[in-house]
Image 1: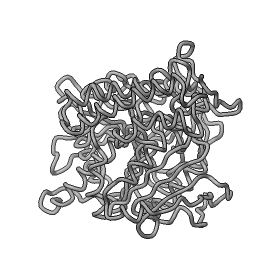
Image 2: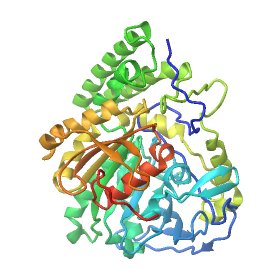
Image 3: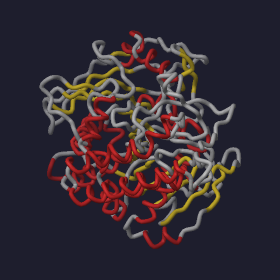
Length: 498
């Protein structure tokens, strides 16, 4: 029988179209009077700047004054023939000349990063269809942050009819690398800063691939004419990275864990789930060996629906098992999603941020998502890209909310413990240490870490949080993020002024 973990006072959140471990998060912009009217004017730059290595690529910019009082840029950077990536950048509220540069990516694939901006960790939070409020826990308090819609045809990003199709993360990663080169060429003041990739959900596939492209290109930067990117770390939040370890761990969470969704761990539902998990395991092993879309595509689709489909049919929100979600009666589990759609598609907001007026903002492109998944993109062993990065000094943070089932913490902690880096033995022996947020002293979770200073390989378990950690526990996520990007151990008492 299904066990109900819902709580009457739990805040609502946002939907995920496919219950893939690695989907989307939610968010939105605002202005400075609170409550804020979103429809302020912007400074149109309409700037078109190329790059010596990309002479025909252009940048179309606005300077919005939505959401925050800091310097902002938004618009499009062309990363190929008829490929246009939309972004929204916010300078640090504290020290933009010295604070790190962070790229934030939502998942999906096909989930807009404007959702992370406006519902999780950006400078403002959606309050209604035409109103936002200031976020005191915004991640741009101590960092310069880019929110990027990628791959093309995600959010406000788009491709023309002559564009080369993007069917895989590997291709998308090259586009993101081109975007970063063009962004840093046009804004050299940020190019020298430590650079972090923070990604959620399916971002656990995106981020290691992007980091690997950066790592490889940096080695040839001196002779290629490209800018070296100061890659400092990767942050993976409730992310899919090692499907073979993560997806088959679902019965452990659903039947045996502290937030089990079934009453009887040996009942018919759990028995059937374990059978499907074994089939999923076998299919993923074949995928890891063959590494082709013909083997990996069916494996990914079977595992997603086999692990999570039956639970969603009975109203379980697999992104936060404390919540109920009857999708037969409502299109989305999170009312904020509808507000965001309306807000982002308003003519005033579209004009302010320089979005193409012919485009419709879609928070989740399910056509793109199915295309990637049916080709096996989400079933590949992406974790195998990480040891070379970690061993070369790129720090790795993996964090997980303890009530998220779709990317549950059992699987996440297991794959990072198995990761074959030079810190493997130290991390395997590392105990769980309690983590208290510096500002309020609240016990927010636990952490394991190996390496020096803030850690080279670190795992954080966040209490009372689901798939969208920065939304569910904004103070804790803010505390964790600030310590990490400044290379300070998460278990120390050092605080940051807000």
